[in-house]
Image (cartoon, rainbow, N blue to C red; front, side, top):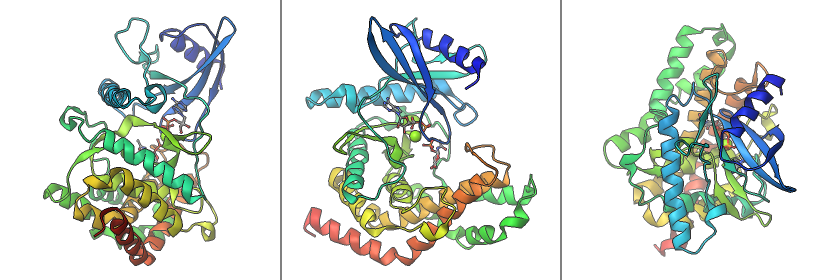
Length: 375
Ligand code: ADP
Ligand code: GN1
Ligand code: MG
């Protein structure tokens, strides 16, 4: 970390309502968008930790609206947890106010926006999981999150990234990137381009049904990666984090994105594609935990489309990685020049397996529906 960045962060931290002196600031987490740090404060011999995050404002263009969403969502969940006698301190995030009490963020001298949360102790997050029981618990965390927000007034939410899971519009961005070929990479990824083009028609399937009113809009998280749910020492889900993309959306986005990331046998950027598979046991465990906690509200069409949503969300993410690669890596954080291409390839490998195992996924869902409804 550069000295300048450290000084910048220290002056930011002091503008939040925190007690004591800064002991340490360290980078944390494996997210692709914001920058996250852990801040340790000492106050009379007591230590307390916080997460400090720099908002990526080229992705989230209106930080005021973004923070307003998070403030309202977390207040809603906190009220619910308290009413149910549950631990509201650990069950949701709490954005710290600044010293004036006016904002839940600090804007620094360089125009960057920062926010702070008390660190929820004794938790871990996973980038990969091989135990179905752990993944079932993660699903319960995301399912409960959706159920907690079922009565949140969706119309009051700001759209933090327009058309976020509009896969058809992601496809059009991809075609534009191929046509521009800004950094001359298109010639080398003809196979991947053809893979996406062969699936163009499917990119519109969920969005068209939302527009037609056949699939209900709900308040959804929209970024349900396994590492966005904190798990305690017994691997129970404690708190859903990374709330920047909570917006009106489809339950299919959340289910599909969780399967995309967590039901894979390899990391998102695994180079050796022979290690990348869709694990049906993990799929079943997640579907079980999700239907148990959120499924009662689902319509028959939502249930029917759960397996397809896993494929579509994986295809969409692969399209986004490939598009960013073609655009010269301007959106996702990367650690080397081929990073986005590797990520796109793992997604396409998973899409292929989703296609091969579609009937098995459908049979699993049918079995679980029977379990929960007796039908
Ligand atoms: P990103 O946009 O970088 O993914 P996240 O909000 O997901 O940012 O935070 C990155 C990681 O930091 C999470 O995966 C989680 O492990 C951890 N984290 C974030 N907020 C907290 C918190 N309040 N308490 C404990 N850990 C947290
Ligand atoms: C980004 O911020 P992070 O790492 O949780 C992205 C998601 C992608 C994901 C792919 C705001 O999530 O949409 O699915 O990377 N978030 C945003 O790993 O674009
Ligand atoms: Mg995250």
